[in-house]
Image (cartoon, rainbow over the protein chains, first blue to last red):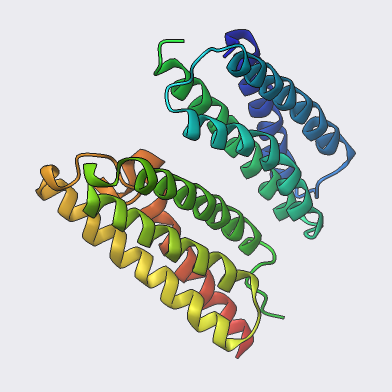
Length: 121
Length: 131
């Protein structure tokens, strides 16, 4: 894993998660701002996944390869599914749902880092 | 209109769906790669995964029948997490590896023990609205 990219991804997802919380408190549904935030985070997550796959192909080992790949898949699908699920709820609860999706994405990246590090790589 | 998957229920479904996916993949990997390591814990994890899937599906469906299924799933989950949590505290040897419900879901920020309570409260509220 590329530590800088990992930290950056966790940071931006948590920042947008806080923005979601702000929208919940303001009683606002998901707007363009949060969707742009989701797009930005997704780009970072995809970049990270591509980097990880390149490293895996290059022969570097993750702690538990199967678990690592599952987390990698989860890391890129969680936000698109979260956005899809939030679009059906045009209220503050939609913003809350998106916030949960961002927190889940951040957790997945943390776990990715742990699984990768468990091989000492 | 009493829809269990709208309003705050939307968050409930989101968290249940995350747990369903997480528990399913985790127990699938555990059973496939190291089943003999801790059979009881992994079978319980698999059972938890099924309960999460049932709860997620039931919460997204309408009607009194699905409502009852959702209540049953949440109640099973609560009973399971309390039983497994207590057992894992009393006899740590039986759970060498962290399962979803061991020590009341401490490995998952205690969400497994809080979630069914919120679920049952929410189901009671939506049922009152339905009647």
